[in-house]
Image: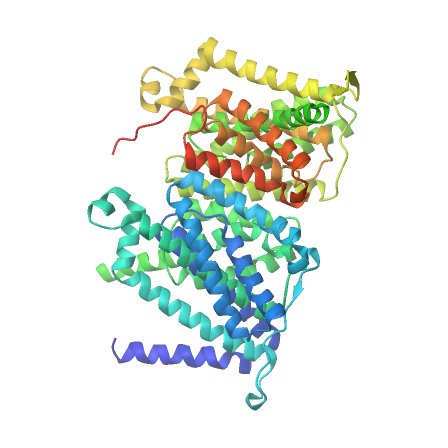
Length: 313
Length: 293
C-alpha cells in the first residue's frame, strides 16, 4: 500500500460519489441496478467460481431476498435498511441449509437439482399469491432521501446501494484473499488433497453456499430499491443462466469480475433486445459458448494473466 | 379404483414422452459423458421443423420421418462444431456450453417461427376404446408403441449389430477403441445425431398432445432429466422405467394432492430427483462406479 494506491483509491471514491451529481437521472437509476446485480454476482462467483459448485438456482436466492425484503417492508413496515438485513439473514439460513444436500452432489447432479430449483421459483411465488401478490407482483416503496440532503430519489438510492455494495465487495475480497480463499481453491481443484491437508471440504462447501446465497439475497433486496416493483416473471430460469453467463464473462473466481457481471446483466439485455427481441437469448447463448472457447478465464481473469505475464518480463 | 386406474393410464402416457426424451439424454451421456441441457430445445426445434413441413403439404408421418433424418444432421453438426472442442474440458465448461446451446436453440425457434402458439396435426387417430369403466385412448396405445419401438430399436442396435458394438466400445474406452480401428469421432457424431432424432420423436409426441410453443419443452426436459436420473443416468431400461415412474407420480399428485394446484406440479420431479440423488445417487438401475484416486 504505497501513496500511489491511496491516491488511486481516493480518485475512484471521488468518481463514484460524483456520478449521480453529473450524469442524468436515468443512468443513475441503471447504475444502482448494476450494483445490485454485481452483489448477487459475487455470491454466485463464490459458489461457482471459487468453490467450483455449479449452481443454476441463483435466481431462487435473488428472488427469496427480494421477496423477503419486500414482504417485510409491506407487512411489517420495517425500515428499508432493516429489510436488507432480513433478506441477508433469511437467504443465509436457507442457503446454508440447502448446502447440506448440495455438498454430496458434484457437477452434473448439482446442476440438475439447482435447475429444478430455478424453474420452481416462479410457480412457488404464484402459488402463494395471498402474500406475494402472485402474477400481479408487489410494489415496494422506494427509499426516500431525507429532506436536508436535497438529493433526488435516484441519487439517494444510488448512494444507499453504493454503500452496501462497497461493504459487500470489501468483505468478499477479504474473505477470499486469505487462507479461506486458498482453502476454497484447494476444495475446487482437488477435494482429496484439500482434505488431506486438513481442510474441512464439506464444511467449506456448506458455508460457501450459505454466504453466496446471502449475497444473492442482498442483491435481490437492493434490486427492490432500484426498481420499486417485483413480479415472479423477473426471476425465471433466464435470469439464472444470465447470472452464470455474466460471471463467466467477468471471470470465474475473481471478485472484480462480479462488477463486469453487473454491467453485463444491466446493459446487455437491453442492447440485445434492441437488436431483436427474440434473439436476446441467442446472444446470451453465443456469448457463453464463445467465452468458453476463446476466453475461459473471462475479462478480469484474462487481464490478470496478461498483467502477470508482463510483470514476469 | 376406476379413477385410480384411469390416472395410472394418464401417467403412463406422459411417462412415455418423458422416457423418450430421457432415452436421448442417456444416449448422449453414455456415448460422450455429457448431460445435454439443450436436448429439449433441440427437440422443440425439430417439432417446429415438422410443423413447417406439414404446412408445405407433406403428411404428418412423412414429415416426422423427414425431420428425424434432418435432426441426425443437426445433432451431428452441433457435436462437431460446438461440443467436440470442449468435450475433454472440465464438467463446468461442458455444462455452460450446453446451456449456451439451450438458449441459442430456444431463441432461434422463437425468432424463426415466433412465440405464438401453433396447433400441430397429430399423427395418431383421435379414437378411444372403452374397456369396462376405463377409457383407453389410441394416443396412449400409440405412445406406448412408439416408446417400445424406440427402445427395442436401441436394444437391437446396441446389442446385436457391429455398429452398436463399435459405439459402445468408443464410449467405454476411447483409446482402445481407436487402436482396434473404430473411428472415434464418427461414433460420437453418430451418437449425437441419433439422440437428436430421438429428441425429434419426443418433440412430435409433445406437439401432438399440446400446442406447439417455443417453450413447450421447458418442463418436459426437467421431467426427462428426472427420468434419466431415477434410472441411473446411464441405463436405457432405467430411463424407460424412470419415465413411467415420473409420469405416474405426476398424474397421482395431480389427482390426489389438489392442494398443490397447477403451479406446484414441478415440485414432484424435484422431490424425486432429490430423493434419488441423496438416497441412491447411482439411480435404480445404475452401476456403482468406483473412481480411481
